[in-house]
Image (cartoon, rainbow, N blue to C red; front, side):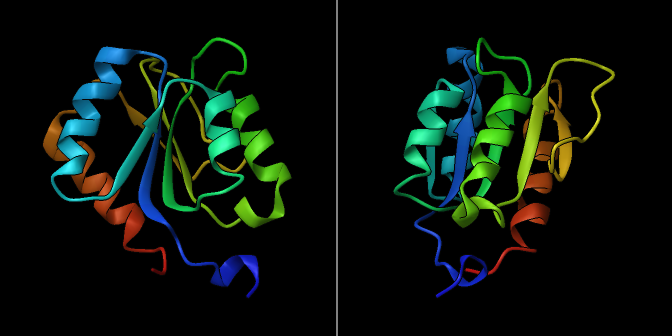
Length: 126
């Protein structure tokens, strides 16, 4: 089974160092999706060594490693190359880079985040 065919273990990996934001978004997503959440890029990279999500929601601005560096670390493992990653950001001017499929504003409400997550996951095989 190659990386493109690898079965996902859960739907979403949420990575954010802001405990409050992570808890709120996790609560929203858990009603519809199987989700794991971690507080750092390091934890995310370690988790991805043994688990495969359908989507990663990754905070852009975190302490070292930040979002872009974490994404590069995720992509270094060929089994993770196919996993779509969306940056979560509170900044107005953030661009998709390093393979992120999109940027989601942290100011988006519940309905908008759920809609985007649904759209992103609809393109990923089970």
